[in-house]
Each structure stands twice: as C-alpha cells, then as structure tokens.
Length: 283
Image (cartoon, rainbow, N blue to C red; front, top):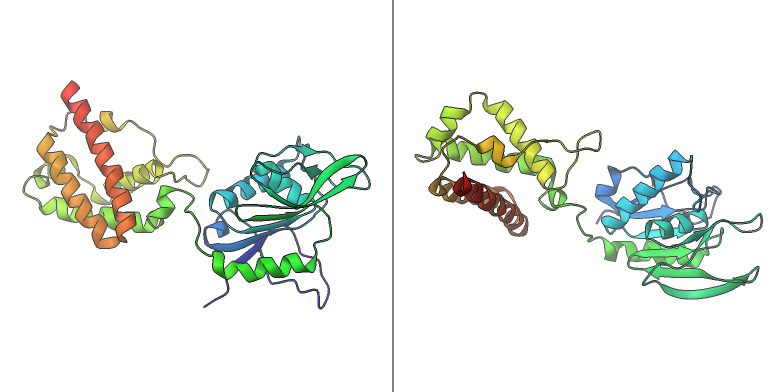
C-alpha cells in the first residue's frame, strides 16, 4: 500500500538524521487527497491576524483540513493557529514564548506547564489533531503520528460533492441521465422542445448540481446562480414527469456511483423534485 500523502504548512527543519518525512507544501486542492498534515512552528502570529492575509489564508487551509478530518500534527505557532481554527482562545506571546492557545473544547490535555504565572496546555489532542505548544517537537510525538497515519486514512468528505466523487463523477451521472431521458417516451418530448444545445445544457446543469452539493468555482463562489422554480416555470412539468425523472436519475446514479453515493445523490434529487412539485401546485 502506498504511503499516504503528507502535507506541511511550512518548511520542515533541515538536517540529516532528523527523522523528518517527505512532505509536500499544503494547498486547498491537495487536501482532498491528503493522508496527513504537519503544521510546524514558523514563528508567525496566531493571536492577532490583522493585516496578515497570508496567515488568514493558512487559517482557512487548516479549517479545510479539519472539515475533511485530515490527521494533523502541529507544534509551536502551528499549534496555536490550529487551536484558533478549532475555536480556542489564543493569547499573544512574549519574547520568551510564542503565541499560545487555551485547549479547544473537548481536547484531552496530556501535559500542563506553568509559565510566567500561567498554566498552559503543552500537549493536547482532539479528534485527529495532536498539538504540542512548544517550538521543538519531541521526536516521539512525530514517530507516533506517522505510525498512526495508515490506520487513519479514512476521513469525512468535505462536502456532498466530494462524497459522490467530485464533479467528474457527477457529470458522468448527468450525461447518462440525459441520454436516457432523451429516449424516454414521457420525458423525451419535453427536453426536445426546450433544449437546443445539449452540451451547453449539460454544462449548466452540472454547475447547478456542483453548487447544490457544496462545490465552488475557481473564485470560491457558487458555480450556478439562479432560482430552481423560475427556471422550470412554464415547461408544463407535471407529477408524472417528476416521478419518471427520479426513476431515470436514480438508474443513472446507481450505474456510475457506489451505493452510498448514489443514494445521497438521489435523495437530493428527490428533495428538489418535491420542491418543484410543490411550486407547480401553487402556480
């Protein structure tokens, strides 16, 4: 089995025989396939991020890793920043201590220390995050984290879109559905009367589904903007059309996706069909 992809938020300490693994620079796209994330001490702030766009961006990346349930090992300023992403209070540091965080809600604190009159959590864990508040990471923590990665490879999808396999898998389902619908005695005439450019229609509907399943465009915003009911107004869609649409959509979903993903997608389709049906009865 290939080793899980390991990412890092900052360059790892250099030098021979340090035991540091190979790790690629983190990015939002790489998180989708990451097996683990290292957040080393880099000396940057965590308490006051005003006029710190790069730190805000890093905080968002860490939040994305948490949503995806990516195992994370953080220390020093990295630990303070991930604690902030978890909603913990972060205190500004002093010349002899980096910014430090109170343990997040639900954290298991393994080691406490006293510093300048404060009692601080030195080593804590919460879910798949292991944190060390000191700037020098104990080798034993690194070794234990790396040993656990292969057993922690399963993680929560970050969105329903990821759960169904991403945009490519979604497009395959939609393409199959429209091929079935075009030949269907009930739905075929409806589509033939209102769709002139099938490739453009597929692009438009794919963008709609990507947005409905929590995906975003290149600018971070929705890929589709519009009103579902307005788009379908005046098409003469009746209850029997919606029922047949759901049957064919379900067949296409199960033909291309694992059962759990297909059921997720068809459940979303059923909810949209119910809204369209309710809107049709009111009009």
